[in-house]
Length: 304
View (cartoon, rainbow, N blue to C red):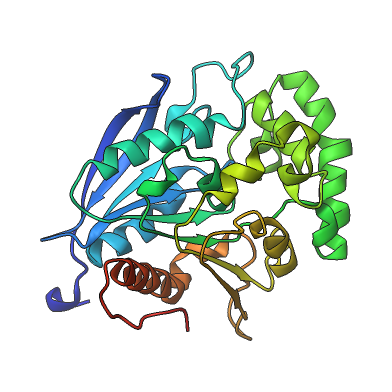
């Protein structure tokens, strides 16, 4: 690689952000060189540490965005010393943690964009301050119900929830995902909520105890794109479509990725691996287009 083609170094800061209830969260900020086009918050998947999104964050920074990644409470750099006995609700991530990041980033005089992965596409509708978001682009966000998944994955997930995980959770006191090599360990409250909601075809929209979420999602007016790969076993297009019905008043763009023959599968995690850079550029172009349209300007970028 020549000096002329060497990538621009991105200045990165490790910070502690206080959630809305004061819980300390580990975040990283990636600063765009020169004048920034906007701030961008990356809302990751359940059990996926923020370091997984580093390459995307650096790429987006080189494209002119100031980027923040975050580890939600109970995970990664926001994990307590002892996970057993740690009390929290899955909803804390979208009602206390991510809102604090939105509070911080929206104080700056720049558009605020959102890129979500899996859970990150769920969280928008539960944010108390989603009105501060300019546009959102989400990868692999689905309803979580095994019935939407391919047959082999359907049985694998049911085995996971009903056979493998209950004795491990009873033994450890939390969801010890790392024992199966599936991601970061998760607090007991996340496990309980997640398991319950994944038992419904439309996730928590079907939960009798979560009736309030319907109006909260209906209040979202932010332009949102929900993109999924046809080979995503956890969030195939039909699963995504079942979930995003909740955003009934938001301008939605739904886009299916067709995996290319001869290339590695995308699955549920490949959206943020380095070979997916073309998808990153499509996402960033779409966000800028949506932001400029909201500002009354004319830009034609959109998913290809």
